[in-house]
Image (tube, rainbow, N blue to C red; front, side, top):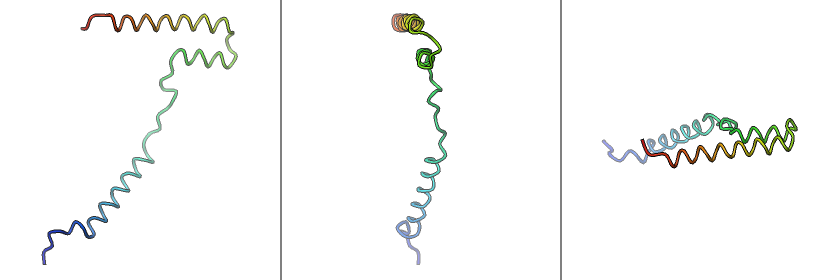
Length: 83
C-alpha cells in the first residue's frame, strides 16, 4: 500500500522533535552581547565620577564639553547636504 498522507504519522513527530532541537540550540548557544560594547564617552565619564576618580567640578566641565561636541556632530550630520 502506498500512503500519500504520511505527514500526520511519524513524520510529524520528527518535525516536532527537530524543531525543538533547533530552537533549543539557538536559545542556549547564541552569543551573549556585551553591554559595555557600546559605551559612550559620557558613560565612561559617569563611571569615573561614581568611582570617585574625578571631582564634581571636573565632571561638570567635561560633561559640558561632551554634550557640546555631541550637538555639533548632530548639527553637521543633519544640516550637511546629502552626498
